[in-house]
Image (cartoon, rainbow, N blue to C red; front, top):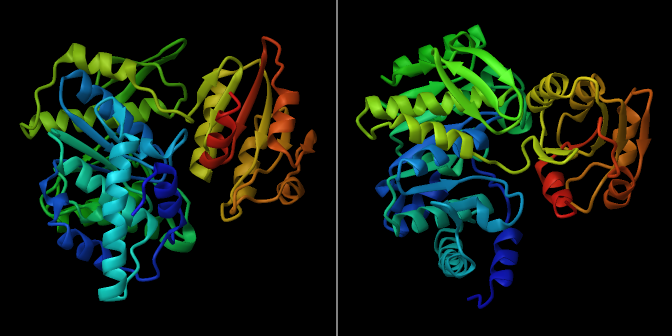
Length: 417
């Protein structure tokens, strides 16, 4: 048993990240031992390649503004481990986290000794969230899928409503090397008679969505780009969704779609008689929404965790729209298992200068390898991210420093800001 939170977190982070078996049997077994706390939860389940965390955040703040008790489960964290699990406006406390990690240690040992199965890191954290939320008076719990959908640890829940934000290439070694296989994996969160809301727009993928949801007797509700109009970027972003005006404070052209998706989920929940929307509360919730590490601005320094091709395209579109006439310097690194060649190509389209770097993280690619694949005419390399950041951070009014490439890197660099 652990007596300090640092020892407890160190243990859980040392546990194997992912399992070898392609099923949910470990999760189902552990849930049964714990009394199936996941069955008591009023869940909104969010999957997708990009935009999951932002959509969760918009929902969270809109629901909180309405006065509901709201839990969220997201990953990875940007500032500290506790932010993976929140209740209303607060992260799980160190004392609560220590209590639940100790319970997980006992479960981990029991399953290993009696069933010769090893519960993975992500499964353990998901189980902690089930217990934590089951012990609280929650009106809604919003779960962000960790990886894929079908075999994700969160997929033992029975949600009220599900959503898929977007489909693009990421984690191909696990999810497959075609958009269809990635989409099918994410569609695994769809349960019988549970509605699915999506902002996916690819016609071929939508045909797949329609076939899949029909088999599941699940209503498919689309958020189409045709439903979004009158976008105006300024200190706030103004737009219309289905001809109704809204305003958000989060930066990024893609955030309009994420916000529209969250609004549609709220509308569907009202249609299902799960809540009553008050327009002023919904509007205020959207403006209040904040999500660290996603087009997050500190003066002329921007942090964005674009770590796959879809994220890089969205980042390029945002930078080109929001910062015309600025000199843009990029500080970039990537995890070695990401498609960084394609990501770098997107960044090269808008960057005036790129500095490739690295930091102390097991999966981080070397600055040399990143530098080597770039064809940018103004590229540089520095192996120490903090050192080069301190040289680049002194900016003139029409200059931007963009720090990007990985949410883990954003978390690491955010401490310097």
